Image (cartoon, rainbow, N blue to C red; front, side, top):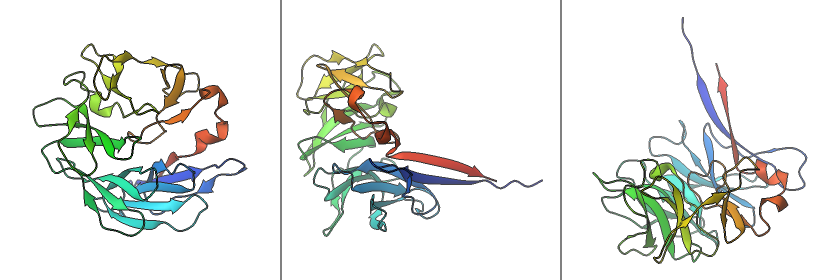
Length: 254
């Protein structure tokens, strides 16, 4: 008996006002990474046969215009102005670099012994925050200038084995980032130093929601560590249509 399985990653989006989903997939395994602030540009990766062994990064208009290949690597996040895609290499130790979404040349950000698991932009656009670990050490979160420099540790080492998979959630004002404490509990750590704040959550919408100073924000679904979107009034004002955006659907065909 022979059995053949084909896994396909698809991206569907429902923009406010739509009555049906839009098809935004490209090749055989499209995975969403980020949306531009105006919701018009989707950053996604191809991780199947078409993406090859190193994966490939693409951008595409949510209006359905054809995708544009940016280059090799897995995409993580768009810069605030939409001109740069933060990406990571595939082979360990995983490194971080930038791919231009328009004209320009790729830029190397890291070239060290740290294995960079996930990363996102700091709100100031000049720095990145990433989760990573050096050989023989536990994962922790760091901040580093985009133009280079030495990474600065934000969270303690050895908080938990799941620190690297926790995702990166940056407060809207750029002052805090989530991390695991040595007691196994999640905290918001001040990026510039100071005492961490215990995380409280609101899970009424079925997603992990973080509340700091009475303001709710949360990671985007399937974002692989992209910083959460911020809703000033909390989740009660979030439209249900938004929940469909960035959703990745996998189908199994035999």
